[in-house]
Amino acid sequence: MKIIQVEDGAELSKRAAALIIEKVRQKPTAVLGLATGSTPKGTYEELIKDHLQNGTSYANVKTINLDEYVGLPSENPNSYHYFMRENLFDHLNFTKGNHFIPDGMSQHLDRACQAYEELIRSNPIDLQVLGIGQNGHIGFNEPGTPFDSTTHRVQLTRSTRKANARFFDHFNEVPKEAITMGISSILQSKEIILLASGVKKAEAINRLLKGALTITFPASALNKHDNVTIIADREALSYELNPQHF
Ligand code: F6R
Image 1 (tube, rainbow, N blue to C red):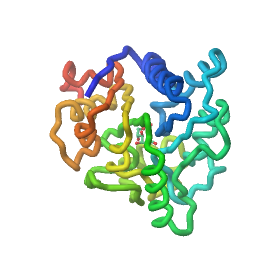
Image 2: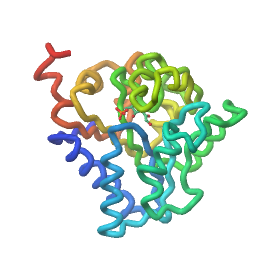
Image 3: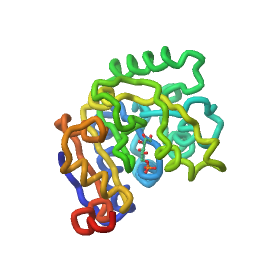
Image 4: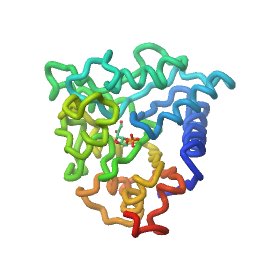
């Protein structure tokens, strides 16, 4: 695994955006795997800035998102459909129909998962952007998820629901279920960048870099992939310096 150490979230966003822009310039038909959450927001802002200033085109780029809550319609501001429109899709020149996000409103969730997995297999992801949960989750793959998992339904742990509750009015509104690409789906990507910012991620990053390959820490599966870059800021890499703070 390659590590790019940056100072803070702002620099992280610039470095991550630069890698995405480079990929899209090299391959205008690139398939990008995208994440939601706080961490990639600044990266998406940098992509928008670059698009306005330098005209990088996304007309032939496809995007495939990692995950979506079950039961939140796309107009719900907490749905990942909404997040992606607000933070990225509406601001770049994507072609309508080139975005894919799991359908958490499907009446046939198992079938929707299978169709999503087929979509990933037939549109191999050139560059996957990942965040990381404090418990090591990637996508919504919680501890215990098998490494050979494909797109599937998942019961969200209380800790993940609590972490995400900051976006909702009440904890009870946080959905209990989601659809996520599996670990095996993520590992199909040709290249992966994992972004981590802030001291809250330090223990997870330390475990990712030093820890054993174990399903109790889902991100450790990334050690099986040969093209992963971690972009982490000083706080996210601070575990070695201040282990007593954790
Ligand atoms: C989001 C996702 C999650 C987040 C993770 C970190 O699509 O798949 O795994 O990447 O929960 O979230 P933030 O960036 O909000 O700390």
